[in-house]
Each structure stands twice: as structure tokens, then as C-alpha cells.
Length: 74
Image (tube, rainbow, N blue to C red; front, side, top):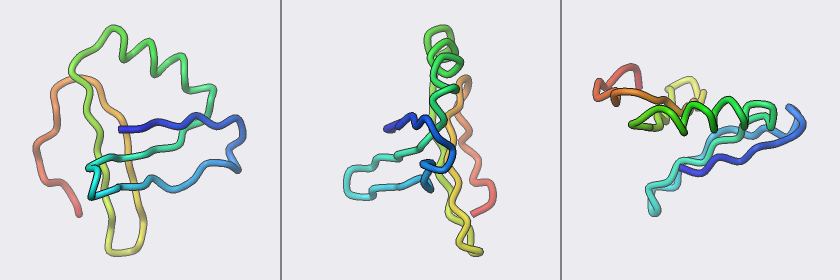
């Protein structure tokens, strides 16, 4: 996973999944850097989710704690 932090909400882009590299890139506001860093420093494991919905909506997120192995909505 790659996380890019941006200063302006207008700079936030949709999450990207690169199948060849098996990498998820997400874009977050810079003000979320410290809370995310703190969570990553004290919690394990960490996992990412990426979803593409039939409506064209794309969603990705970072989670700490036990991994979600369910299929959920696709």
C-alpha cells in the first residue's frame, strides 16, 4: 500500500489498484497523517481494503487489527 498525503481536499484522487504490482494507492488529507502514524505505531496487524462497485464507485481504506477475510460487497 502507498499512502499519499495532500494538503487540500480538492487534490484528493480516487484510490488506485495496480494489479501488476499488487499495490493500492490511497490519497488522504495531510491532517490525517499523525493519527494514522500513531495508530500504525501501536497497532498490529495492518491491512488495506480496495473495492470497485458496479456503480463505478471506488473505495479503499487502511485498517488496524485483525484482517477482514470476508468477501463483503463487490
